[in-house]
Image (cartoon, rainbow, N blue to C red):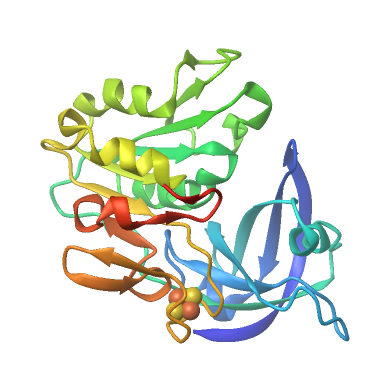
Length: 266
Ligand code: FES
């Protein structure tokens, strides 16, 4: 883990409210793997607010550069959206464990729940394609405006969309699409809201023979195992999402004890 000042290479709006920021940051980019994250200081020199760094998944990796996907929804990410090419951003990372691909994996289903759930899946799709694996990326969103641009995906990836309003792709919740697509895949990887994981974990048809890894979002104060603020219950005892995760086997997590950071206990 390094704390470094990264140089902003670009920072552009991708879809409604979503931005991609490319950073030149060799100290982190050359070590990071998909599923890991960085803690970003979302304020300038001399400013004191927001106090805490913001955890962001690594969205893409290219040599000494990496990209972050974020939604400009508050003071911190609003500040981030205002950074221009050539500007500087203070970054701590890489943090967490990342996704793993076992030797028997051939056909992967990568699921992004919501506009931000897709964030770590694109770096992971790049890696899986490089390894010669078949990859389907499934994104579930409320409507077409929130979809990730397909022309940003590796060309060999199959893209599936599920929208709640039916404006593009399958008209259903993402969990329904996972159930339909999972029989044709041998591994599932997902990133999204806690209720999505709880629905997957409760669906024995999906999980019966599919090893499934999930990337958890939790409120994080430190991001590197010091504050215990991100602790969850697992089958093996308490675990810190920032250090033992954020990627877990779905069967290891005690789901009814996990707090959804967006809506409180579920
Ligand atoms: Fe502090 Fe995980 S965020 S221990």
